[in-house]
Every structure is written in C-alpha cells, then in structure tokens.
Length: 284
Image (tube, rainbow, N blue to C red; front, side):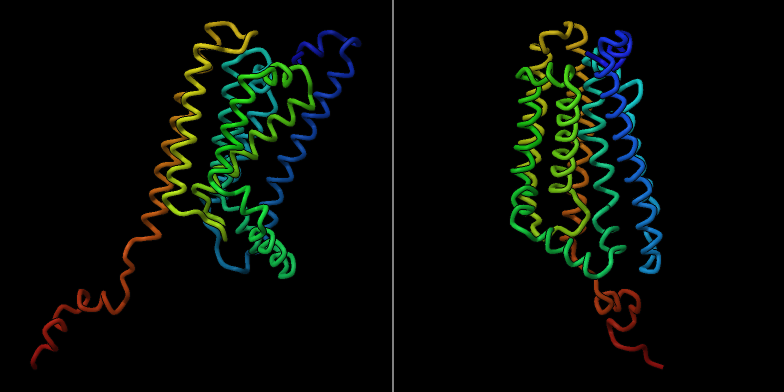
C-alpha cells in the first residue's frame, strides 16, 4: 500500500498512514541533522585552515538527492511506478552517496572534533571490522548482492507493503552505495585503502553485476510491474548507472594519476627557472 493509498482509505489504513508520516518526519530530521552538522563542523574547525567551497556544495547536493529520493512526490510515485522507483534507486544508492563521499565528511569531523574524540574516530577507522566492510570486494558484495536480492525475490513487494521493510531497504541501499563509493574513490583518510588493481577489479565486477541486473529486469520485471513501465525502469537503471559508473572510472584514475605522478622538487625546477646555471653562471 502506498502513502497516497493509505491516506485515501481513511481510518482502515489510518495506522499505516501515520507510520508513513513518522517515516517522513524521521527522514526530514536526519537530513536536517546532516545539513546542520556539516555547517557546524566547518564553523568549529574554521581555525584549522580554509575548506574548499566545492566540497561543501557537494555535501548539500548529496543531501538534496537523498531528500528528493526519500520524501516528496518522486518518492511517493516510486510505490506505484517502477520507473520512479528506479529514479529513487539512482538518487539514494548511487548519485547521493557519490556526492557525499566527495564532500569528505570524515575529514571535516576529524578537523572539528576534540583531540580525544578524533583519536577514537581514527582508531575506529583502523579497526578490523571497518577494514572488512570497506574492502572493495566486500562493498561490491553488499551493494550488488543486495540489489539482486531486492529484485529477484519477494523483497520488492514487501518493501512497498511494509514501512519498516521500506526503511531498511533504503537504508541498506544508501549505506552500501556510500561504502562502495568510499572504498573506490574516497577522499577521506583510509588506513586500509586497497591497491589500484583491487579497486579497478571491484569496479569492473560492480559494473557488470549492475548492468546484467538491468538487462535481466528489462526482460523480467517484477510481477506487479507492467511491461512498458518495467522496460523504461530497466533502461533508466542501465543508462543512469552508466553515468555514475563513468564518473567513478574517471575519479578512480584521476586519483591514481595524482598519487603516482612524478614529484617535481624545487631543486629539479631550478635549472628550468635559471637556464644559465645549466652551463654555469654567465661570465661578467
């Protein structure tokens, strides 16, 4: 039962409509906390040097993506339209996490937290559970595996008939997208950063699993989804995912280039800046 349907059936579905109101209120609260928290952290850490404006912009764009995907007309349409649902999938599971990861929230937190809390956060990042979860292959399994489970079982129907299941599915969708993106192209400190070869292999695996699932959905949409709606949703998943995947590829190789390019020291630059010294000081 979708939100609009629950409201239309009056008292019979009054409790379910109230649950949706609670869900929407909780999402709004989380989004406000994310927006205000980032701003407060920047203000607290303003004495530790400047912070790039574009990273702040990326954070708020990411928060906006989550808001559009989880509340409002598009989120409501996602209960009856497979195409709208897939748009939500892209916003909450791919575009939003990418923007938030590039905003470097962990770095912001480390700059703003007191020394004791910052050390605790650093120890947590170095812990074994975090190392396992943030490994690129684990992230691919959590992300792609969750998507296959969602669309090839009754879970897709359950998430549209139960508010708790709906909330858990979207929470997993967002967290899995964030962890995968951070493991591949994260800009925050990562004590267990995998090698370029491992990250490249993981990205290839994820792209293959995502695109194969999109093609499978084109031919086998969920039972309650109409043929035209299913085909359009699958195409949106395929081509919309392509845009994000290409962005990940560019960011992955740009980061690799920045980390491995030859460093030009001042001593190495000296002959170019003073060509006469390559052959000794000019005679007077």
